[in-house]
Image 1 (cartoon, rainbow, N blue to C red):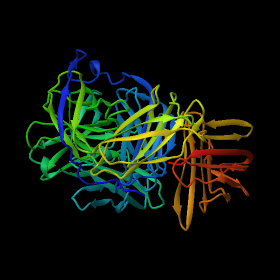
Image 2 (spheres, helix red, strand yellow):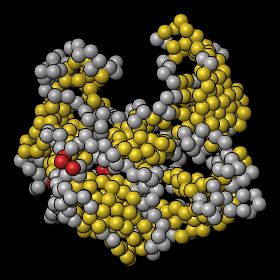
Image 3 (cartoon, rainbow, N blue to C red):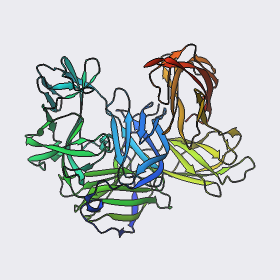
Image 4 (cartoon, rainbow, N blue to C red):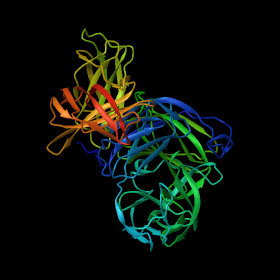
Length: 590
């Protein structure tokens, strides 16, 4: 698996121009009258990349957006079509065993929205006896102190006795990858339920579990004590008393609850429950939006944009982060009435361009920001889709895989497509492009294109010769269900497992869901189904034999996993009814 590069990206940016206009008339808050109940719904595609703690793609991560669900493929990539989003605050949840539950809030646009989330490893820091209480200390000085007889079972509120496994991690707001690891974002609702922007002085994640894995919480009349280290660069500007904030898991927004006092290089405060906790200054905020383009007029798509405060050398902690969409658009909540710095970052979170902006007292549209560069680090890839008669494909798209990121780029009426990548450092040697002809339901072979300069012409990409049909079709107890990518969220991927492989097949929507996997040797054949979850059945007892017949096993990008199975299962919580299922699938390998 290819590692995302970590080296510094070197850009030479020679021209930047602003066509600015200001809109709306209220000041001090991104929402009129500070009304956080205002919704601005939009239905759009959401895609993203999930990384593990070392920055490598994380496969098999469960993704939830509203009522829609999916899982990441072997590249850590997911895509949900027709997601119910909100322009003021959309929420993505990512979950994988062994990691803290991840939340990401963002301001959605009408384009294809992008998020990048780096998971935080859920390491056990130690065990505390529930009867006597105790303290856990991390290497950087972060502490979690639990009261004696002050912990309950989260499921029923019953007092808990026994060992408490404490899982915790410190999150440094000054870390270069904070845009990927930040729980939620820096959007928050204060104690008066007003939308504000946060300036963080340190965060911790805390989860309590019994020795058998049961979730625990602080008892109603008890409190735990948190010690949160202040980054060295922020200690001189850190206030004596600061508000504490926790993540609201329903919205992904921080909520104000309690305070912490500065004690040396740390903040100390008491909390009534555990989640992600954040020591922050919360202030008035406004929305700032912009569109990024390169000097040729191509949108800078899925590009990392950050805004930090600029009120002195030690005051650069207030941040807002976002990723441009498929049109180069990005919007976010930023601190009001402050001098700010706009930064453009590479895929590794390293700032490669900065520009002073603000202060802003009202919502502001910066218009189009045009960036001209002579460096090969901003890579534009373009080409032309053609059918087998060399006629331009006017109803099609290209799937472009580069540096572990995947793009779906729609072709124009003449078959032309184009996209731009901002890389981490040196150019990757090549990309893979698959041409899709929607009208004929055909695709071509995956084409490997060498990347030798910042402007790469992929030439003529054939979109013909192979059926492009993708689907999961299944019948459950006499009712038919189906998924048809790219309109629906469904894909398959294979991962190494012991001496062989495990193939995952997944499809998810608001009203239906199927997720299965089976161990195999990487070729066609018949294999016992290892795990199956379908619709509202997830705790299942399979009636053997239940075998998957694999009729085609994708070896290369652009090829298809194809197979089928049929059989019976029982719901483990109610073994009496016997359920019948049959399923067939054909899904492309990326």
